[in-house]
Amino acid sequence: MSKSGAQNIGIWGEAQSCAFLKRQGYRIAETNFRTRRGEIDIIAYMASEGRFVLSFIEVKTRSSLFSLPEYATEAKKRQRIYRAAIEYCALRGIDLDSVGIRFEHISLYINRLHRRLHFQKRLLPMVNC
Image 1 (spheres, rainbow, N blue to C red):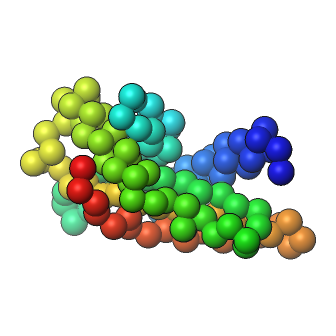
Image 2: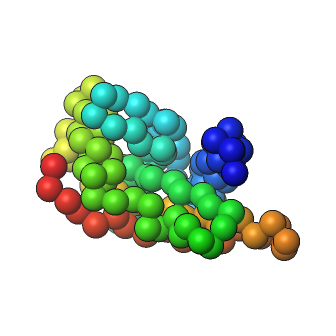
């Protein structure tokens, strides 16, 4: 697949993920936040058990099962996401002690024959920054 084809699938996957998150009760704060430290695909928030929770979400979309999206977020990538999240909070004046923070991953599989989407949302494991 060409780079532009992969980019189009990625853009489409992020749009589908935003719609999925909204149906789950999230509000989208920002998409494609970039800093020299890293990039975050989606930043969303919601109230959970009376507490404000901010989620930093990595989205991986694949059209082939030869490359499973959940295995595409290696430790170095997670470190960049965590560092970008810290910078995002600092730039926005978000007190890390007053909000819940989650790092999540959404995997999308596109089955072109049946035109189905499969969403798999999970928490990313922590790494040392």
